[in-house]
Length: 452
Image 1 (cartoon, rainbow, N blue to C red):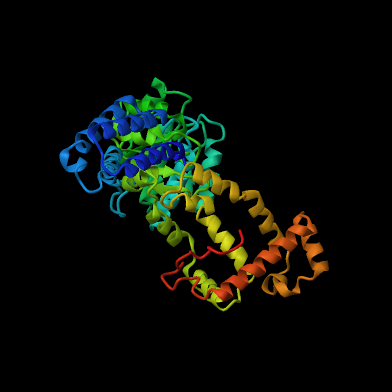
Image 2 (cartoon, rainbow, N blue to C red):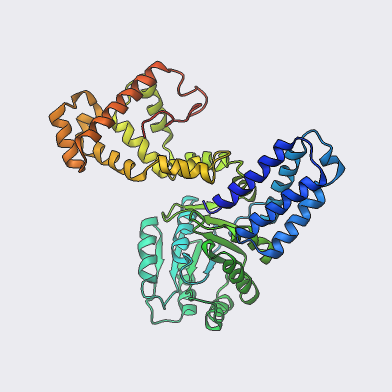
C-alpha cells in the first residue's frame, strides 16, 4: 500500500514509546520530531505537518497523559485521533438525489489520473445499489477516451452515451441529461476531458458545463502517486471550478501517501473513495478512521470483513467448510478457493489489513506469496480433467506427465502440489476444529492451512 514506508517508520517510533514505560515531556517531543520527519518524507504538506504536530503535542505533554498508567499508549491514541481528524473524521458519501430525480456527477481531473476508469468504477457501484446509471463521454480530445469508456461501461453493464468527438462537451452533457430523463435514469456521470496540466481552456470548459447542466456533485480524481502535486491540483480545482469531493487513485501503488493526509486539510473537501487497483471493482469507500489505523499499523479488519462479504459466495463457502470438515476437499474446491481469494484482492492485500502488517513484514509476505507460483498452481489444476480434480487418487504418473505438459511446468511441480494437497487434507482430518466454529471463516480463516 502507499503508506508502507510511513507505516513502518511510525511503528518504530511507537515501539520506542511503549518500551519506555514512563515518559517525560522530552521523550514525547523527541518522538514527535521523528513523526514529523516521517510525515514530511511521505510528502505530506509542510503546513499540514506543522499543525498536526502542534495539535498532538498540545494534548500529549499534559500531566494527565505523562502520569497515566500507560503514557506511551495514550500518546499513540492521541496521534491516531488527530490523524483521523486530519483526514476528515467522518466518512462522506456522494450525495444522490431521490431515485425519481436525476443526479448529475461531473468527473474532473488531469489526464492520466484515472478519471475515465474511475467514472466506470463509480457507475458500477451505483448499479449494484439499484440505480439506473448513464455514463456520458464528454472527453472529445483524447483519441481513446470514448472507446475506453464504452469498453468499461459494457463490462459494468452500464449504458454509455456518446455523440462522437465533433460536438462541444457542454452540448454532449446536455443531451446526455435529456437522454437520461427520457429513459428513466437517475444518475448521470459525465467523463470530462483532462489535460496534462491545468489550463484556462479546461477550467472554462468545466465551468460552462456546470453553468448549463444542473451538476449536483463535482468530483475531482487525483493521482496519489503525484504527491504534493496532487494537493496543488486539488487546490486549483477547488478555487477555479469548485469541487464537492476527491477520489484518490493508485493508492495501492508504491507511493508515499502524502496526498491522502494533506488534501482534506488544504482544500477542506472530503476524500470520498480510493482506487486500490486496476480492476473495475477496486474502488473503496474512504473511511478516515480505518485509513489512520492502517497507517499506524493497527490494521483494518472491518474493510477485510466487508471485502469478504462482497466477494465471497456464502453458500459456496459454507459447502467448502463442510467438505473440509469431512475431509472431502478436492482440487475443484482448491481452485474455487483461489478464485475467491483473488476476488478479495489476493493474500497480500488481505494480510496487509491485519494489525502489525506493513513495511518490512509485508515485503516478507509478498516475497513468500509468489504470484507467479500461484499462477503455475492454477495452470496445473486447470490442466486436470474434472474427474481428476474431483478424485486426486486418479493421478498416476502418466496423468501427471500429461498435466505437466498441459500446464507448461516440470512434472516435479505437479508432484509437489499433489503432495502438499494430501498433507493439507491430512492436517484438516487431524484438526476438526480448524474452522473454529465461529462464523463463516473460523479462527484461522477459510484458507488458513491451504498450501498456497
